[in-house]
Length: 347
Image (cartoon, rainbow, N blue to C red; front, side, top):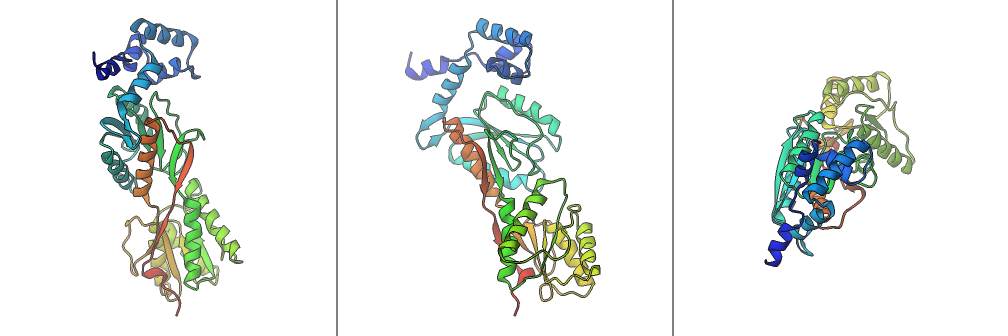
């Protein structure tokens, strides 16, 4: 028997066979064999008995997977990874996916995709399917920037993208929303604007508070205060229009507005111009996300979340973990400013 054949036989019994023999799910079998909580003693004994009867060794199987995946110190290739997306047709997920797929392809990794179509309850089903396919790792792409509302227990490495894991020991890659708020203020200051208001999004979303925190910090560092109230609403254009009307009705003296997404900025610009304010001559407006969701005149300056880089970095972290070098905690991807006409400097 050659060395390669010997490696292929190590851990030949797969985890799904153990799960089937014990009549439990893959995740339950994984928890039972690794001594994780939330598994009854009766179930744990049944899974261990099935593993022993079949000759399954989780440690041997994982070691074999690592040996077969790792080609050299430069990376891994000729293996499969699973990508679980809560909403792959959403605004941001496709760009994240492009970045991840490019990184995986560069290492000759085949990516299997499961789209939960907006139903987070289907995620566990997708994970089970991926594990049955023998993936070496899982990339979880959320549709929101809030911490994921579910726990993923897997016998293979897992990396979270866009929405971070609640477990600080897990590896997550997310956008830097605090820096996004800071960058918006710094850009407006560079354009000569000093009376800055903010139209915020949904107060239930962490991104709204993080961007607000970053903007307030930058204003404080510049010795300035926010004009008007820090009002939160929806992420829709109607709230952008309504919030702009509130600013105008309050008689606030402002020369710039930070909108926490581009759709809010569209509504804001529409209301400002309806009221006789010129953009950017009288009021500069900046958006967030550079999503391309709205076409306005003048063209909108926006903060780009760098989602393609986010997807690439998440994929590289997963490749590192599969190769035996896991990352921990949340890694923030830098944002960038896309300068357009809505924030031209004052004459």
